[in-house]
View 1 (spheres, helix red, strand yellow):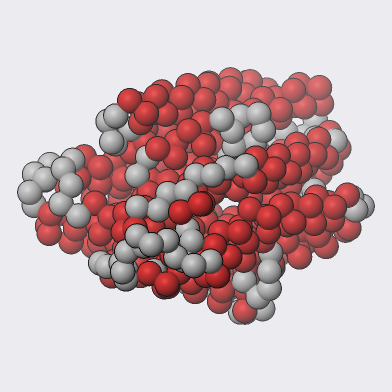
View 2 (tube, rainbow, N blue to C red):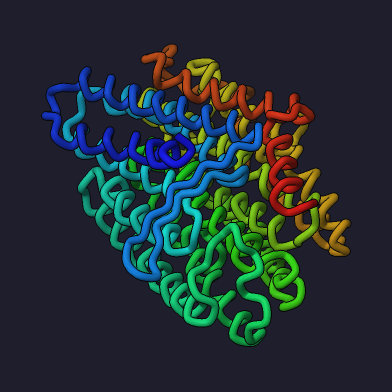
Length: 488
């Protein structure tokens, strides 16, 4: 079972996708049951992995693809941080998408690729070596493109072409860096952090920044972020998917693996590559926040917010200080819960009240109070207001900046939080305190499955902040990662 469980966790999503692809669109109830069943099975398998890893169990699947090329799925505490987030949020996104699309055509195609995207993200999380990571990283690109272009109109196709141009170019850079590194050191296994010792520092430094360019596309580092706001033409479940769970998180997770499991902390410090990456992440944080201020479209404002917020993860990892790393790791989870809440709410506002712009929000809290309550909790968390989870992330990052001897991090966090407040608080103010427009619709919070996922994720973000001291909280699990894997 220790060898089979990682593969079963991956295949749970693959099997769901293959079944759904062959279902006629008219079999909506059957498709919904298979989707929910696959998501629940995946969550149960992840729960088994969590319990096992917490008690010291090792799970690993290995087999040779060709001489010198090994396929490796390996479960560790870091993997489970990302995998648990994706399994939990995918169940809620599945419920949300079923309600969002209703009886719309093309759902077997959509949910088939949706489950393939789940499978690719699972593979990224479970990858035990660089080759396996690359395979699933590129499968993620191919499985998300049909979701971005799902509407099939001119804007969607243009956004899909831009998405492919960016991500395939990033994939080519990643492949080049991987080939270059493995030509120097042989196959790179994430469990071995000494495989680059003694190699040419100049070559390692150059390859590091090629890796960052390849991974930086998906995690939207400046100036590689241009695809992300354009992809907002996709349906709301896809936007939630891109921003909270799949693409941007795969990029950020890859950067963490690169820093901590490919190069290792000692080598990162010896080469001096951490501080330039931290500076780029800091600039991206401020740039994304600044661009969000001028966006009138709600989803585009949220997109530039993602550009900023994902770089908190990169900043924490690049500072190579225990508290900063802790802040970056936990923000991978916290940002996911808060951002998916915001996109769930934005989709509900657009579908139920035809509200897509900031200037249309006046008084909407009276017609959709539960939706706007969830939105308000998540937005306050993004700002960093206690006791929501975002406060915990920013506190740890600030302490980590001081630990690393980089006090400028405090300025970056403060400036970003002020801009976060400047682009989120007006939305909350308009929704709750301005009089409604004359044509504001009556209560529109139906169906329940369109509203409930946002409330669940908002409460999860709130509880992650309130219960941060517990061992099985995102912060507690992140501490376990640091203690077990990196000796911090």
